[in-house]
Length: 421
Image 1 (tube, rainbow, N blue to C red):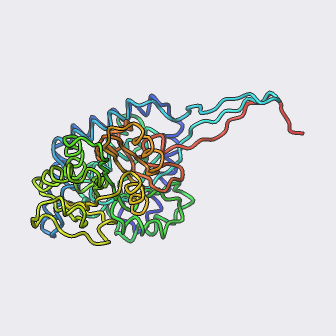
Image 2 (cartoon, rainbow, N blue to C red; image 1 turned 120 degrees about the horizontal axis):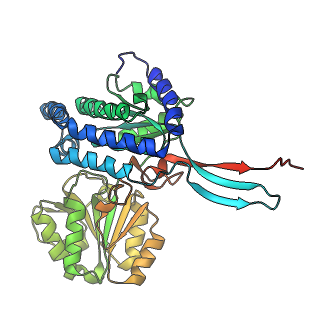
């Protein structure tokens, strides 16, 4: 970790390493990933010590509980990080996969083949697991990666980076393929975003302010999502027990993450049947309900139920708060979601295949759930092993991005002395 003020040497080393990783075999990268998972487990105590120091400093600095939750590691979370690397190692190698094969009328054999992007930069805030997840996905997909974490996780990220470097070296790949940048000030990000000759893609992960900062200054293509304003819609035929279970899980299981539900929509035809039970369950779980007038008519008059204002429909609370509205059927739900969605994740609870089919056709967010919690909008849960980020920009990738999302395609053409006339 250099003390030089410039990040360019890091990017130059990453570019050189990316060529070695891209030309390595899938088996070699699988082997290196296995060694990274082993190193994470072997260095668990060092990771916990480093993280404890970060959390203590954050608590002393007055950071919010939601931020500290994203920052904190435990033995279980470290095992989860290692298991995610194992899962990525077990995936089919996307590099070199043939997407299209055809023989043209002139005899040319044309193939479209998956290839690594090159060098990726990830800029993120408080979650140390991003360091190992992103590193593993980059190696699986044949890329090199620069990881610039937030200052509050500096010790944790440095420790995770050391484990990853040890695993790469044990696996025979260059340690420069994964560089965790910890000793540079925040304003170094602006410099990093000018290296369009060395870096191929930038992925910011964090609050809306960080993502807009990166998107507005980068000369390099950016994959981004600004907010996670996720909706759960309870259709008129939703069973009460299922509605309660999904609404509570979507909001309460981990409220500080981007796939937590921020708005609950309830069909007017079933509000009197569903809202009392769902509202009580949310209140009992410690949630404050920001409800419109139609919803408040079916909710208890307690301090946990407050009148919603216009800003609540676009709020990403990342806390035990949820906006609640009564809507006029499926049309009303779709209209509300189209007006306020951040294109992250929406869910419907319904018994009707016809209704579910229309919801999935007309709601165009990156993840659409039918009778399932929004919390499943996660790379690990969707079979990607982990995610390097979630894209709501629709260009190149849309939704949680795994290893395949860090590749592109190119054409390989085989001829026999062909010339064009």
